[in-house]
Length: 367
Image (tube, rainbow, N blue to C red; front, side, top):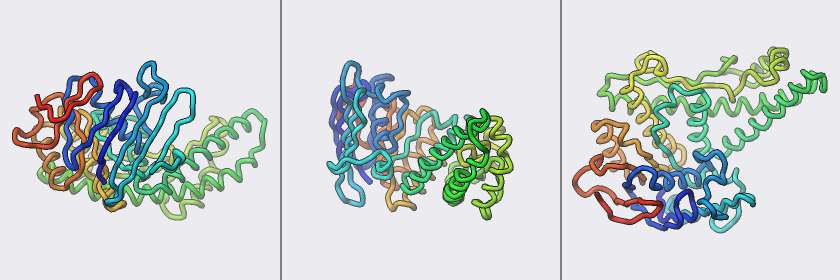
């Protein structure tokens, strides 16, 4: 997968830019708060409809009425165009090859992997961050899984609302039966896909972790189900567990077990990274996970996704930077990198450079 052209209009602090990235390494240099991250965010948004903004209206340039992202790309050597229009007063519009599509149909069209400094905190943050990491990875490889997630989230919302009604004596406990059966069926689909994906991720990430650490560290990635541990007959056992916890769930007004509460844990040489990991081990594991995510998506889809590296070069030491850049060049992965310092990159001819200043971009600028 390769991006051929990017056009942005009224996106964040960008008034209007259009550029053609190289097929390999692209480096966006500039001071902080000039718009480098905004460029990468537009690609990630076009992949997963995710952004740093609390509200989509915040993605629109100040005082403007609409923001536009238009990306031309090759997928298995076939040209496509993805366009998104965001307005504060109208429903978001998405077009794929000039045809309107729904948001749920977007995932899997343009695959990308984002690596930012925030990923270094994923291991010590709440389980929701780790679930989002896993779900984004699987969803881009399997749109069916993404649809199952949406359905599951909706069912949990309905069940939680019903639990509150039962607690307030506005509904009967037996009203849960139908919803519990539906949740159990989709729970099994989600858990099995997660378990299969974590198994593959564990193999790929450990292989890379060993190489980076010069075979001093073994990484284990473990999927942990909250309040439900059996991986056999998941649907039946999960349904029984839901029924056993009904009184507790009614009292608290929310569902206490399920895929929406599970976690992913990481262990280095048998010791949990979240508790015992050093800063060096956390950086190595974050890098290993991102590289394994690239490998995972290629194994699932047949192509590498676009890699977005947002200001991570300053977080990696010289050894890890060299290993990362060598890997990207060897695998010929199209990569967009933001940085403030030219010194992070080799002195010889390396990649395509862009200078970003005040939301404007110029090609071939090196400083």
